[in-house]
Length: 190
Image 1: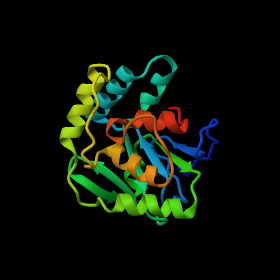
Image 2: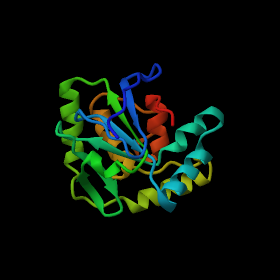
Image 3: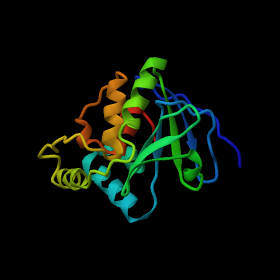
Image 4: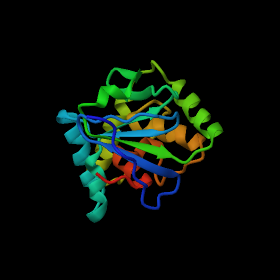
């Protein structure tokens, strides 16, 4: 299987388009500062999708399809992601067997460098387990309390902080964002 064609994002500010890659497909030409949304397998991916289903209503529930995210931090295509072991680097090949979407952001080269530099500074740090648990509780109880932002890396919070440095704003605090929030913000359907 080869690479799939890019599509334009439906009127989303800050997005040039996206490339949807079903299992077995891959994308090339990654640029630092761009985003990868992933449909994570297993119980944790299902739990995150359930949380998104709880948070979003009606038509927005479709964005809960995505359960993980990573940021491209080099033009060679290295992804920075936050997982249970902490913040690490991987290649896009890691997700060849998974359904993912590469989101091409409309950023200047300086903004791309700033987002990647900021995110790369977290390499090797521990995952914010407490923040993840608090976010889960907040979503479970209908977002009735705010999750404090301690500046520690979570899958989406690190990406949101990096993209904020590149000039992209979000409706919620970084500590309260889920992969579905990124998909909704950038208009990336399942």
